[in-house]
Image 1 (cartoon, rainbow, N blue to C red):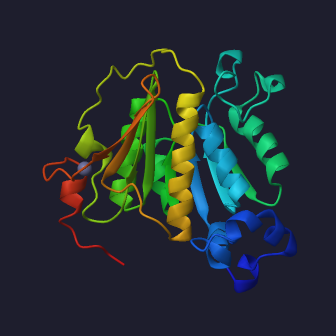
Image 2: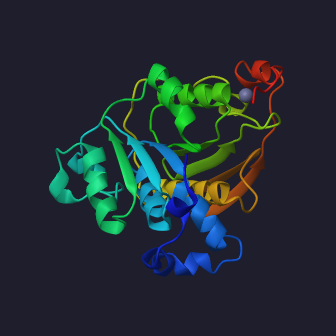
Length: 261
Ligand SMILES: [Zn+2]
């Protein structure tokens, strides 16, 4: 249980977060909620980089990171949380070095392993919100299914070439899930290399960080049942309305069950 004194803001924190504390939508109460929040981030790559940086900068108290990869030189055009000197180092470790320099007062939990469905089912309940920053479809669909089953909010984001998209899968009964939008994987599940400039995952991760902060602070209008889609080549952003699919194989069945509180 978190006690009142653990969430009270110190003088240092009042200074560090001053520019967001003076926002009426956040204020000291919102900042305290940010401080006691536990966020699970899957992926410390191109999307995870800005996401983790902004979550840490904003003061999310507990950030857990899963990534099984080691840093490669070909990652460096987009994975801006990492230092070139860390090529060959596990990404979670490399990311933690940067995060500790950025905001040393937070708790970072590192897992240099691939998140399996079994592990996800056991750990997801410990967190307030989950963020998907992965680049493979297997994990993307697995995370959607687990978060829907456990009724945990999930911020979903993905890129393809110059395009990106972000949505929030809310535990509310009237929320569309990822499978409502894309029932089956659209690409072959094997990992194929495709071209990307760093800005594309940068925008996706940044939008996801904003969704997390809004959710945790309890402010604003979320991306539930909406998708932000952008194409940087034509410099266009669109909002796409989403609807839950009454025949969705994952969320439609669960929605017929009563919520156990
Ligand atoms: Zn669904």
